[in-house]
Length: 385
Image (cartoon, rainbow, N blue to C red; front, side, top):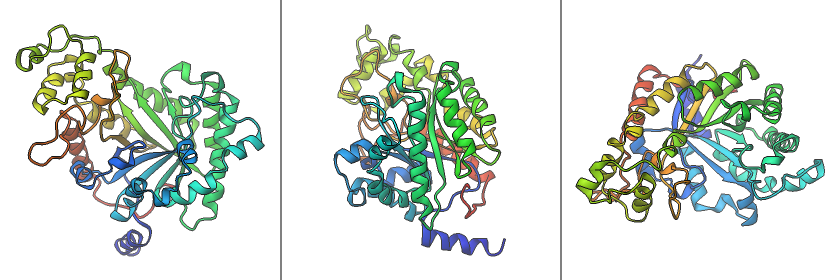
């Protein structure tokens, strides 16, 4: 390859970030673009960033994302040498999926305004976010498949008219290690991905309990893809494992050293600290002395090792910040345990005023990046096809 270095520099200047040839680990902001913060992002060491745009919210607000400061914080990442993954979210949990070609066209008309704003911000664009969760249970059938096929085809038509050909993915598919989620509709959407030469791959979301669940998802989808297609994992966590322990008693150290009631269960402690954040020392003590967490504290390392063991794996992104509910109950999904930064359950750093690092996860995240870059020092100007 002639003068790869020069071409890489030119690509950065003219087109933003370049995609790494090796698999990557990055951070996920979901749809909260206002949380994008340069200093904290640099603390992670990540060069890959993921977010999603909520189609219905943007349409209802008649939002011009090209002029939205929060979204422009995401859009500007490419010019700073970062790579980006952007999901298009269509939330049909509280509304019916459109049925028939004309109804779908009407539903997707706002894409004509949305795509010119979001397309330049993406190095990978995912047609969907969580189709099999963001829909009514009784409509997760051919109606769902037809809608997301139409989304992908409409995004493709837009891309065909652009000089920069952003790789397109479809998904994200949830819980595919579970036979109950390996539905005819999921199979049909995977078949569409496989038969569409212009789709570069699929997105998986893996929020689970057992490490074997990762293998289950990859082993289910891998034979259903073309040899050149890739898999990205834009969300993953042990959230479902943590949820099994919300009714466990809090560790004794919280009662002895931090005057928390001995009768409290885990969910009560979490509810307390989202309303009145604790010191980092207390938060660390809570997790460190909870066997259900301490025994899984190397989660990121193990998950990354599993992802990297699959040839089709391209990238994964992990939660950056907490976004707490108003009230934490025994049935609340404990997303707040996952992220790299504990910006809502722990007071800011008294010296810097910045959000403090979660127990072990940020350190582990950075160690993975250091190790991975040491063994994959070269970068390629060629993105996934």
